[in-house]
Image (cartoon, rainbow, N blue to C red; front, side, top):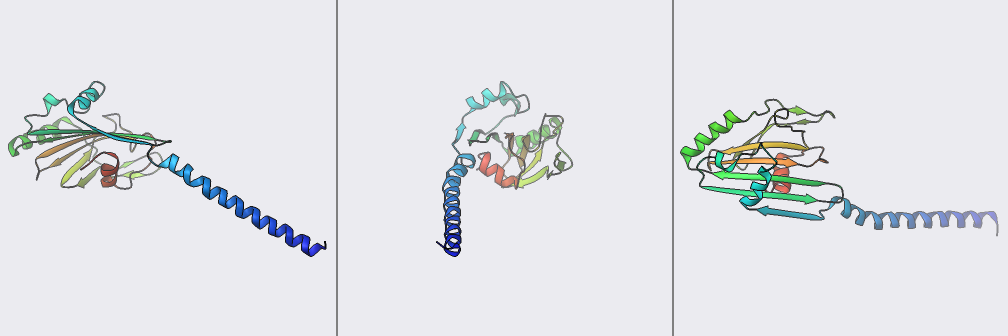
Length: 193
């Protein structure tokens, strides 16, 4: 065999090897991506008994006897788990008549300390501390006062003057590095409507 056919054979084998390698990477990467980033376990629990369990270890979320004369109280515990991370959200929404709502809204504003300025983390990422979703005006509670660590662990309270509701949220995901949109995180990770 002359030098030219040997060279062509080597180039053909090299190209075939690269094609096989690329096929293996693609075939193996897709299931690996699914395992790492797609949800392995997602659940939502409702019911006040789950909220009462949270209150055994959490003194920031309000006690049920401290939220006033409600018309209705809804609670959702939402958890998403993948191979790499777990996010947990506790969402309590209390409904009131107009008079009691105004009383409770003032009580919330007096009891809790809210962040006033956008939060910048140690990586230079900035997070807004006021946002609106579905007619609720939310504020992030003070990181210092309530042992927060944006965006991994935080509390928010939202009020809806139109619906006379107050929403209390506690969120925990130690692997989260950014919040692309508050609405997305509420809907995707917190069981919001």
